[in-house]
Image (tube, rainbow, N blue to C red; front, top):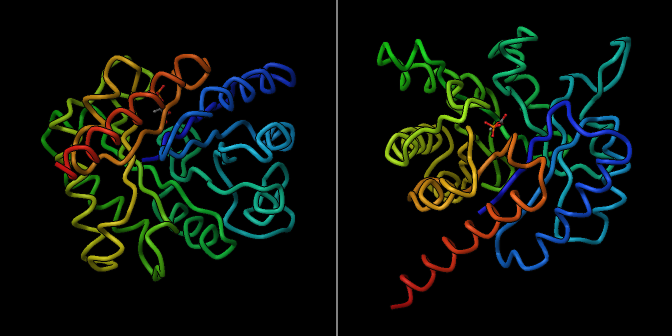
Length: 260
Ligand code: PEP
């Protein structure tokens, strides 16, 4: 189980330190649950220093598909890797929506991230109109297929997919556990077709979209939900800690069930 915090364009030079320290504290007893936070790029180094030697790993929210060059304002995968980042969120719906990021661009970034040994957290998800029209499976299948085109994977740990229905991001609405499980199962099936059973069964598929301490346990209990990508609720260490605890409870419950 992986619990990832997407801080988006939030915090400042001092509050990022305070939040990172809080998350470290909340993660001390996380057991087998892995925790990562993705601060704004300008604070990666500062937050990385706080996380150094702790159980919490560092991630970024985006990167350019190329390694270096005349791309003012951009950041490369190599740069993120050199700062100690382990993960990078790619294809978040806010990037697709506000910055015109296409499936083809997401695919280029995914390939580059894997090449520089970052683990991409590839976000896919339908918007409200698409769900209302009953097109959610078609939309997500197309995003997944496009994102995964043209490369092979040697390990299921080299890639993460996050199912994030756009209508649930920052809205307070969540997919029901049944809706989430249905889409996660579809994603795993597509990964199985592309990379085979071994990769598909070990792949982490995260749910994202207004996850809170209240709904986390039900969502995380679903068979194909392997963690959460959390926006708003990751900006408060105590609240984020409660989601980590929910993940831990689910893990412990499933391990107890499998030994009885
Ligand atoms: C996100 O932006 O990835 C996200 C899941 O946001 P929120 O938890 O605020 O809906």
